[in-house]
Amino acid sequence: MKRIIVLLFGLFVYVQVLRAQEEDPATTEPVPPDVRVVISHLCHFKKPLQDPTDLDGDQYCDCDVHNSATGLPEVQIDCRRHRLGDDFWQDYEQLPQGTIRLDLSLNNLTVVPRLRGENLRYLNLGHNQITTVPDKAFANVSQLEELDLSSNLIATLTTDALGGLSKLRKLDLSGNRIGQIEVNAFSNALQLRHLILSNNSLGAFFNRTEADLYLRLGVTNRLEVLEMQRCNLTDINLASGVGLERALLGYNRIQQLTKLPKQLAHLDLSGTPIRSIPAKFLPHLLHLESLILQDMPILYTLEEYALYGLPRLSILNLQGSRNLSSIHPHVFGQNVVRNETDTELKRLILKGTNIRTLNATLKFAFENLRLLDIRGAPLRCDCQLRWLRELPNLMTLGICVKPNALREKRFGMVEPHQFQCRAEQFWIYTVFNVLLAILLIVLVSIGIFLIVRAIRPKPHVQMRMVGANSPYARVTIEPNRAEVL
Image (cartoon, rainbow, N blue to C red; front, top):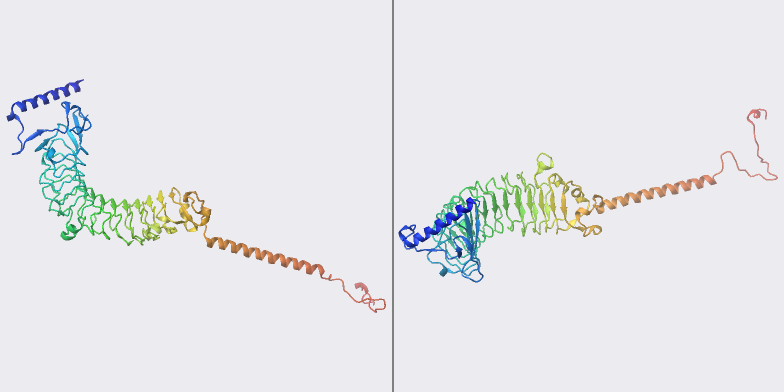
């Protein structure tokens, strides 16, 4: 009840102040010369900061009022697709008190509107036709934390374009025509944490001036996330970014990076024209946890020691690199094979690659692996992959292509003893045939021996020709009478 009374009293005072300002212009806040401040006509309130009137097809934007954690009203204004043009604004636009968010995207603006609002935190001017950002264009909304200028026609960013935005934390300039950035253009944004410059033709600018993003352009070490995808870059110097944690540099012409900050934790080089990952490709990145190499068009192999020196690497994503066909057994270095160094790899994505098999030596690098995604790869489920099936605590997603007996079967559903090679099967058949032949020879030999023994005469019987008139006859000589005879 007390809070409601305080709120009503504050609204009453606010209304009285507005009336007093209308009656006595001398009491109004001083404004810059030649500037006429107009009370905002973006929203229509039946009562001050209460019950906004939102009718389809009217001249007003969609306005919502919510109470903040402190009990004060907060206004959020949505003007998307309202067909607002430059003629909508009359000098400086005074935003309703308590406005924290304003979305002016998807309209017909060609210049940055001049706004006044001491509580504005989020401003979206994306998807318009803005061609330039005047110096200190946002000086009267100095509390901005997020500014979106994406998908416009901005060609140059001047030194003072961000003047007065000392609390800005996120800036999106993607999808423009920026080809030049003046010296110290980002120096006014002292709290900048997230900078998006993707889809701008900045390659020639950085190659021509050898610009250091930090030293020349005034980016502070507070920057944590940098997005510069599809900027036609061949190289970039980020060595001074001691606070940088995530760098998205994909779909550029980069083939080698040597000037990266040591504390970088996430690196995305997707779509770059790298044919093979050589030894120590990313040296000294001791804190790198995630490496994204998706859609590499001509990547064929990861060479020996290619991932050496990345002790904290836990996510390796090679999805869509359709020509990748081999991963060297010592890609993490021989120290891993010798069990002298452990790896932290937990997720390996090989989906859509040309990997057919993986060498058993990688078993030592896969000890902590929890997910292996090989879907879409032409897996040969033979004896060379049996070790992979036998790894504990590993979930493998993939479909066997060969041999024909296992075709279209899920890798995880095949039993370890079913992973066989033709050489193994031939050896088994050969041994079986040899044993069978030996057994047959033995049996035949035994049969012949028995037949011979059956027809052979007994040792104590002598066969002589004895006839009726033969002088020979069977004679038995007793031993005791031999001498008498």
